[in-house]
Image 1 (tube, rainbow, N blue to C red):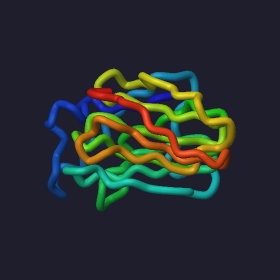
Image 2 (image 1 turned 90 degrees about the vertical axis):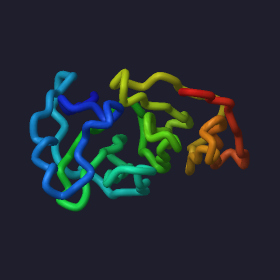
Image 3 (image 1 turned 180 degrees about the vertical axis):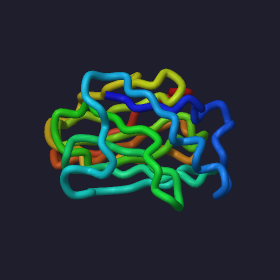
Length: 156
């Protein structure tokens, strides 16, 4: 499931001041079930957007959620992992998000395409963390399988 607002994150039109938070209230659901505010289980991690007042949280409920700060308005959420989500990180350009999960996968979520655009399945056990290189060309992940892996992701 993917919840997106009429104003896309990529457009650069999202307000970056406190007065514009009402712009996030006109959202559409692109799935069968609506995304409810707040996680259903514990929050395991978080990441701050590199240039906007936006926070992403990951949870044991198998989702990540994106919030506008400081009021906590829900911007979007992502479902697709089959187990808890432990790690999240924004691409340095702010155009995508990486997530790592107990299902042993790493996913890249495009805000422009409003969906998961890549899934990496190289780990054999749960993925605890994900981190983009500061130039955004590489994505690293660490796992319970005693490994650290990296992928050349370019403009993903």
